[in-house]
Image 1 (cartoon, rainbow, N blue to C red):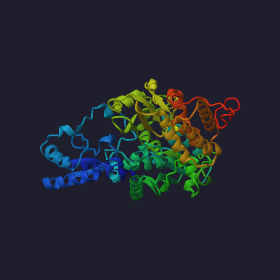
Image 2 (image 1 turned 45 degrees about the vertical axis):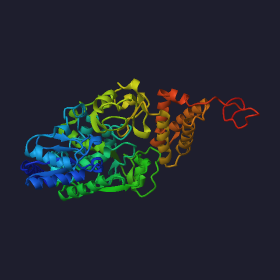
Image 3 (image 1 turned 120 degrees about the horizontal axis):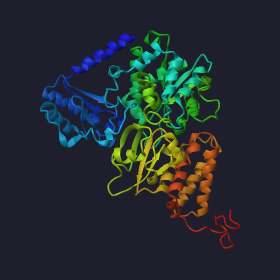
Image 4 (image 1 turned 90 degrees about the vertical axis):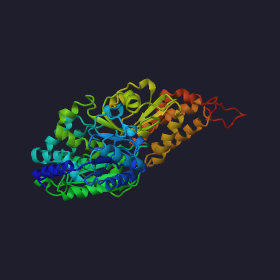
Length: 551
């Protein structure tokens, strides 16, 4: 495909859509599918046939955000958004809204509500807007324009410099500067280099990457191809967990379409750049989200982390320089090249530019997928966008970063959500899970739940994580049952610090975070469960306290 052919295809698709009488968009992402959105789709098709609306279409799109109120439907003609659309409501919308021109007010969502109005969408700009199964719709909204510009107008080092100036940081965890990672890989001497998309999203309650892959897979493919051009790679891999069957299905389709249209494969846009993308399906091990364990898994070996350095950007997959970015990071690349690094750097904060996608879950009124500028206060996310906690309860804490993150109490609600600010309260950005807890939540149980997860997901390679998570979980269970003493809590804190400082990879290093943060901010809940310190005496030889003669 040439650049001219790309523009012609975009024009043809826009003309096709302009000729559609009524265009109904329904959410076909996993959340709404589980609520029955396919039945809603079929009902709209039946209603169109019944009313003779032959020049109308029903289009499955990606996540529209307000997952807790699905199935969601948007009327493209006038932008009206409906919630909880079942088959009966679908027929009613066709009859009253599309035919008679009277929207069904009682099921209509307010597009000006804080949930929608407070968001800034870059990564999610196409989710809920286009048909994820048609490359033509992606191209019609500017898809692959950035890749065309990169290979036709920019040198590889210029692409890297544009990403570096944008200030984009990796959205998968620690926030390493993306441009710097790319530059290291670009400068590394090697005949073969690789780009890997880390789609092994495993945090409980997180569904950001899954939603992007389901709703806008070509955005990720384009970002990977640009990364390949920038560092000199000809092969890319998407490592996605098997629990995401819909995302896998749409990725496979998107790759076939991209190859057929010549935006992946050989001589992309008639240049000397060749780039191929293949899928690798993970078995669901949380530790494979760590980049060195992920690399081993792609190579057909057991997913276990390796000591660093060398880092993957110097020596990664099959010993070659490798760039690994997560889904959200790669989804930011095309907009940066289209609009410029200065545009992106102006969003968010100076040290954390851009936006962040979060999955709102837990004890909150409006659950779903949101995208907000970096630095937004946590209070705005919880109360303005999420609507606060359920009636009759009070906000207690929010956990960012999944099992690797800390619990942030109400006293820090005005904390700006960026990498540095979250670190000051013992949490991390992570991939974007945000779980809200209210006054009914027991923080000791919260810590125990996440430690159980980390214990079960430990690969077992290093003793601090393999043994430490087991002992920390045992102590938390003992505390929760009211059988522990203050000495047990002291031992728990000591274990947390040891595991954090001595574990091989990020799983073990961050596993103590939920415990340490709940001990820091909710110590009273631990103390309320403790019994008296037992002292070793001849009449009590089995005491486990640390008094005189104790063990």
